[in-house]
Length: 386
Image 1 (tube, rainbow, N blue to C red):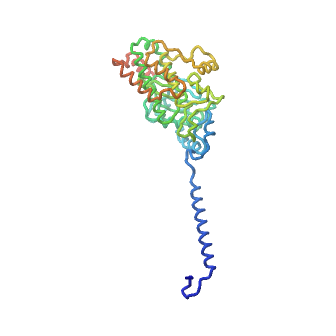
Image 2: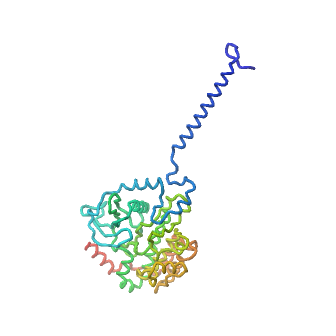
């Protein structure tokens, strides 16, 4: 039956044509509107949805942040909200150590306190350090808050040169200087190996925490561990080379690529770095083995008989290791050697290392006198003098 109007006359064919054209036009504009609305939303903020970024991300050199593109600009903008403390506001009391990019001091404010702290550790950047590099260090330290074995960040300033990081106070400075200064007393202590085991355990706890936060330290060494009270309160510090792997754009970016112009601590770096330009979490495990060796030798420089960088790299690449430290307990020596296994996949995780050190401490028959009168008296005298 043909469609008719209410008066019974047939409908004009033009009506069908106009109705169809109008419906098609409405459909087209609807689809265009949906497409524009979807495109107006940005991609995932960490850049993970950019696609095809693996090749570029895997080439990120050592001195650059692992954050790239839009997320890095957001990071720098957000971290510029620190205080405006200047070097003139600080009373620098004692040099702790001079690093590649900054100098550490024991300090206090010339007036008042820093967030309630009368004494603190500060790091003042050297000339030429970029503020973005310091901001990367700040962002990593803020992510590692509330762990007793990691030096805690209190405040910072990256708005004016020199850039400043203010961190919690430590009594004794670096673990390397502490062991060297107290070598005579510690060497005579019958509980020395138990003390070193306890300190090693707390360092491993810190590194386990870094791994859980997807942070690669890349500069783990005895000089970068601070001591507040030995052996219980040792704190991993110095995150200038560290990387936050949650901010990379590709799984291939987990490696840290070698840059010929970047100075890195070669004596603590694993063979895969020199052979394949590769540094991963297992590189930190290798460095932990070097730290164990340093503690057993009271802060001796690794590979002490090698003078040049070329000799060190060649020595590491052909599989030579540091000699067994005299007096080292077999259980610690076993962990040390496991940290230096090749390929790197054979090395234990920090969770494994924590468990092994816990077993060693549990097997120690007697209680350890960690609060020796000599060290406590020295700590109290130094605190009152400061």
